[in-house]
Image (cartoon, rainbow, N blue to C red; front, side, top):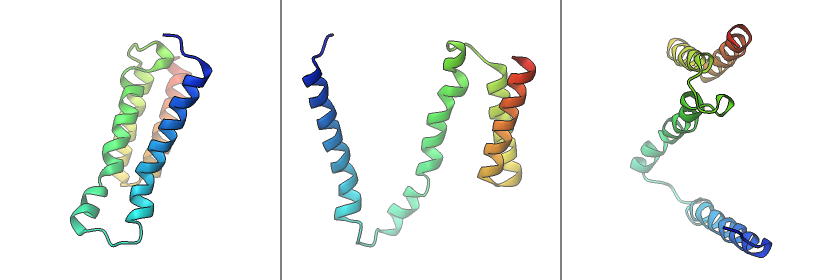
Length: 109
């Protein structure tokens, strides 16, 4: 499917307008109002739900290996989970997983 430059820019403009409208609906329209407690309770879990969805494909089907299983990435993911649960610290989990990935890639290739 070949698209002209003008069609691509029109699509980009519509996506930008849509993104702005979605964000403005929360920030501009209801940003000054107090949100109900039930909504705040549900919004608290948004990062916990989104991050695994972003990270899981990178661990299970890494682009660096063409989608094949990769032991260093799986090991780093497991260390990240264990460190996060043990220390209850997001930064410790991130650094532990990153260090594990770095060392595993150096040792296992």
